[in-house]
Length: 405
Image (tube, rainbow, N blue to C red; front, side, top):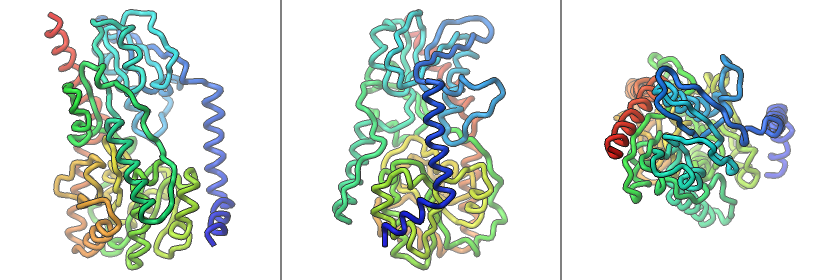
C-alpha cells in the first residue's frame, strides 16, 4: 500500500514540475559556477577601507533591478551585509561561503564569514583585519547532536533508521572571529557562549509581507494546522507532527515542504502523508502564490518543533501570515505572549498543544494571531534587519578601533 501511495504521488504533475525545477537549477548553477566567482562593490562616499564578505555571491550576479529569490532570507541578507560595509565607506569583495579556493590578493580591513572560510583565511588576512562570524545556524556541535538525538528517538519509536540531513561541517569560525552577529535569539547565542565572543543580534528579515489576520474566521479554521519547512524533515520535527495528527483525527494538518526530496522519510511516512484523511500533503508551496495565501487563511496555527535554528525563517514567515506559533524553544522564536512553547519535543506534547489551541475561544485565537503578526511586522522586516545590522557593525568597528589604539 505504501509503495502504491508513493508512485501515485510521484506521477502527479506538481511533483514532476518540481523535479524539473530542481534539475534545471542545478544545470544553471553549473553553467554560472557562482561558487568560484568574486563580486565587487565600490565604497559609497569617503573610502574607509576594504572588506571581504564570505556568504552568498549569487545575489551579486543578477542584473541590477532584478528581484532576488524569496525562497530563503539569506539571498537578500547576504547582499545587505555587503551593502552595510559599502555604505560605511568600504570597498567590498564578495565570495561564496563554500569557495575553498579563494586566496586574498589584497589587504582587507574587515572580513565577514558565515562558517567555513574564517579559520582558513584568518592567518592570511593578518592580525589587523577585523574578523566577524555571521551566525545563521546554531553552533555546529549543538546542531548536529540535536539532529542525531532526533534520529535516534525516531529509531526507538518506529524501528527505522533514516539518514542525517543538512549536518553542519565542523569548523572553528567563532574561535577565529573577534566578534559575532546572528539572526537567532538568545538560544542561538548561548550555543556559541564557550568562545567568549561578543555577539550582536540582528533580527531575521522576511522576503514578503502579508495583511493582518484581524477579522479572519477563526471559528471556521480553529481545527486546521500547518507544518511549514524546508529540508531536514526529522530535524524540523515533521515526523513528530505527522504522528501526533494521525492520532488526532478531529484536527487537520497541512504539510508544506519538499517531502519528495527525502525519499527514505517519504517512504516510511507514506501512510501518514498520503493515506490519512485528516492530513494533506501540499509539498513545496510558493509563499508568494495564491495557494499559500489560501492555506494561511484557512488555518489557525503553525506547528514547528525544530531541534535547532537561528531565527527560524519558515516560522517567521508564518507569523507574518497570521498563524499562531506552536514551537520548541530551539526554534529560536521570541514568544511574547502570542504563541505556545512546547513543554518537550514529543508526539504527546504536540497533540496536547494543538488540542489546547483548537479549544480556545475565537476571540482569543484572533488576539494571539494578531499578536504574532504585529511582532513579525515590528521585529522581522528588511528595514529592521538593515538598520540593526548597520548599528551592530558601527558598534563593532568603534570597539575594534578603540582596542587597536
